[in-house]
Amino acid sequence: MKKYYFGILFFLTVFAFSSFVSVNKVAGYASFKQQFLDLINETRAKGCKCGNKWYPPAPSMVWNDDLEEAAKGHAKDMAKQNYFSHESKDGRTMTTRIITAGYVFKGWKSFAVGENIAFGQTSIPEVMTGWFKSEGHCKNLMNPGFKEVGVAENNKYWVQDFGGREPFSEEQQKLIKSGKYRLIQKEPGY
Image (cartoon, rainbow, N blue to C red; front, side):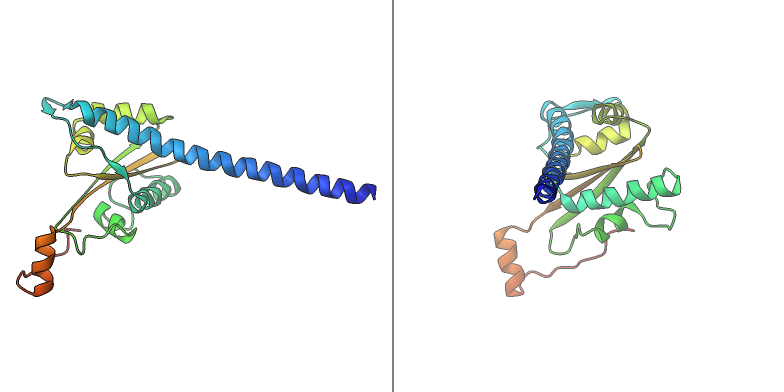
């Protein structure tokens, strides 16, 4: 009976610990996303000087899981293969990686993507400060055409992927469905 009691106690302890670890991972992940969104959107709300040019306030960004998946894949690839570039070692571009991750352009009136990368920073505030101090990275962060973001970090390789898609208006959708509005769709540049 004593063995049975200790077996149940052991099982409950392991279950409780694993639940605690799982909850902490989820909480940490939510915090990771929220920290990025807060730092990005606080600056976008105020406006920002990128290099010598002032960028007026821009609408808030929202998190996009497909952009996050593209960022995760690129951060992992750079860390695993020990390189630092917007182009993957196998030749894939940022646009190709983002579309492959599921952030599609078909069915949208307009489509834009961008990417920031960094290496060596140890915290979210540190990497965000660096990106806002860099003119090109800052321009991506302040671009009002970018409405969605996904970010990942792997072994101090940071990737921030941006997207902006604009839907067709209701009237345009009706014209498309009726055949009175013809779409000429070309693939985005790879």
